[in-house]
Amino acid sequence: MFRTLDLGKVFGIDLKVHATVLVLAGVFALLNLASGGVAAALSVLFLLLSVAVAITLHELGHALTARLYGNPTHGITLYPFGGVAQLAHEARSAQEEVVVALAGPAVNIVLAALSALAWVLVGPALPGIETFLYLNLGLAVFNLVPAFPMDGGRVLRGGLWGVLGYGSATRLAARAGQGFAFVFGVLGLFTNPMLLVIAFFVYSHATAQLQRLDLRGYAPPQAPWVDPRGRVFVEPVREPAPPRAGQPWPWRGVAPQGPTPRGLAPQGPGAWTTRPSQSGRRVYVVWRPL
Image (cartoon, rainbow, N blue to C red):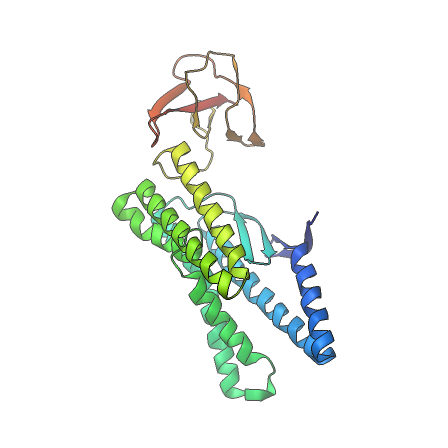
């Protein structure tokens, strides 16, 4: 029913907005127009625009920092609950995880500092500067809550990664995310209903991360790569028995041309290896010839 709308490119990154954002903005504007007139409607639209700008710059902080680690961003999409930067893959090291996660809140802190400076120098002559200051402070603090996949949860995982390893760190961070999702949901029932949406987002993504962890095992994510024999590494999948050569097999993988939903079991000995997953099932690490 609702779709995303293209807003253009920023630093070569596609910027989009979900149509529900525009619908909600129109609803809020009409409600304020009916209750407070044109001035009230324009005031709420200005506030929503400020929120959109702050969130967009926050996500650009993530995207441009990830680019320094060789991780491109497919796009940034604004939703009613916030923004999402679609990175090509997850962080491959604890340092990358922490630095990229902190880049977003750092942008908001810088914006808050600049707003405070402008407030001191200009004062009331610059309308909305006080609101922009507190808005960015609020975004920075809220995003640092250790609820995976929020920034604070990713910082938590990065901090635990070097001590406990990727798998245990991910599991603890995702469990913390599920716990905070429950807290957000309870608070949303009695305060701001938008917290219910955030609770659903956090819980669903934390749960999905736990499922991926069980599928992939405790190894950190890797980008697709080609070995000297010209074979493409494919993500592990769970199968009850080893496949026969040439047998159709619904494995999941990533080849240079993009996702491949189905393929053939590779030919020859040594084309696949096995290892146990967290659940005890066997995981087959498959190679597909180019």
